[in-house]
Image (tube, rainbow, N blue to C red):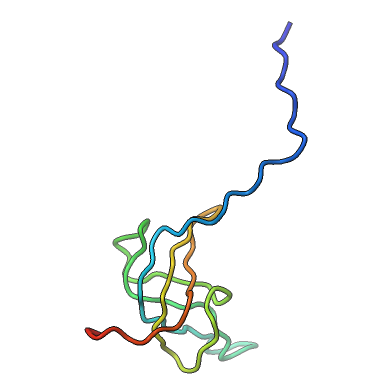
Length: 102
């Protein structure tokens, strides 16, 4: 006779809250679509340097929905790396002044 299964939970597990892995100030550069149906549409933002998981990368990327609106092609932001599912992602928290050594 096969062993009995554990009873199912009445409700699914609560999602874990987001955990901030790293926070730093970087210069975000807007990358736009150059041709096609929507020229000028923002595809993503990039900044120099890798994240915790991709330390050897030249650039890291942030989705447009995770960046507040700003004018121009580049701006300085405080960026967080957030532990999320299915993988960590970056988000720009707020626009800041450039650091003195920039």
